[in-house]
Each structure stands twice: as C-alpha cells, then as structure tokens.
Image (cartoon, rainbow, N blue to C red):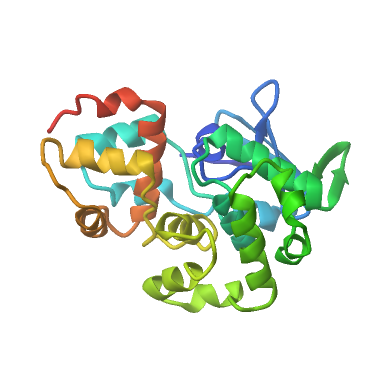
Length: 283
C-alpha cells in the first residue's frame, strides 16, 4: 500500500509513546506487528509505504482518514500548544487493539518508554503466536485467554516486576467476562473509566491511555508525570497548591473537542524538550 499523505510524520507517530510494538530499522523504516501480521512502514517525503496487512487494516490503524490540520485548528491558540504542534508536526493517534493497548499500559507503570517496549516484546515472545511473512518474523500480542493461562513466573520472567500480578489478575477477569471489553465502546466516558478501573493495575491514567489509544475516545486526557509537570509549569506557573482536581477541571474545559490529541502533542513535546519546563514563559 502506497499513499500520498500531507500532515503525516511516521517517526513522530510511532515514537511518541502511544505504542510499543514498533522498532526503527536502518534507513529510517519501521517494523511492527498489527494483530497477526508483521508490518513494514517507511516514509519518503509525502509518500507513505505500508506493507504486510490489508489496506483497510493499515488505513484504520494509522487513521489515514483523519484531517490532522482540522484537528490541530481546534487546539488552544497558546504559545505552548503552538510549540508542541510545531515540534510534533504530522503526528497522529493510532487505533490499537483495545486489549493489547490496555495490557501494554498496565505493564508501563513507572517504566521508561524503552523499558516498556522491552517488556511488551518479552511478553509477546513468551506467550504470543509466532508470525512470519515475506521473510519478516514477529510475535502476535497474546490474547487475554493466553495471559490468563500463564503462570506468575512466566510473566515475571518478562521483566515486568510487580506489574505481573496485576496483568495476570486483569487477564483472568477479562477472560472470564467479569469485565467485558467489548461493551466499553457503547459506554459514556465516565462509565467506561469506572468499568476499566475495576481491573487490577488500572487507575485513571491507564484507563485514559486505553480509552484514547485503543477506543479512540477524545475525552480521555492521560495525566502522567510529564503531563502533570506540563500543566503545572506551563499553565499554572507561579501558582501554589494547584490540586490534581483543578488540573482535571482545567484540561476538560480548555483543550477542546480533540483534547486527547492535544494531550499527546503536548506530551511528545515536553518529554523530548524537558528544558521547556524549567523557565516556561507566561505568554
């Protein structure tokens, strides 16, 4: 599949912290796994080349139909968002498998991006189905049932530490239909968060990550360490005792209908430019 795409940047999209199955190859191309297929992606200028999966699957996963320019126009017109958009120009949110996304973010607690990628890779190699296509090899992400049948020792060997217990318990709840992921899409946002937080290892941040990147819910605005710092330093500079509740009220009223997109641009910017939080300008 080859398409001409304006406002698309493959590197920003795959390395902004929303997905953990992609690795950059020599020459700047990327290899990853979508579902049960090994996918190769490369970009030259406006030409995006994707192979390994049906065109419809690739278009949906990379959200090629999204008008990024129109989305960006809904962001607040403040200097911080302008810098974030300029830095991450062309980044778009992926539409990942909900279970894979949820399980991956359970494994992400208190870990850096590179470490999360390694843990997820270990999990797939240990419990996932081997895949091979056109000389490329990989492993599918294990289903909830496969993880539910695993031992704690198997998960521990994937170097996920205390997260092993949470992932195993969550997989067993999902596999036994105590929490049915297929019903989440029909729920309103507060109900969806409440339902996901019944699962071990799922707090507000993990629930929002899963809803944003797995279910495409733009109301979701994950607040991790980087985003909390960004909100405090960029938007509440000099103010003391700004509660987390105040930060939540602020982002819900300020960032517009594509708040989830705005959050990811802001996250990608401050994570790669931590100096922007040291002496952030007020205007």
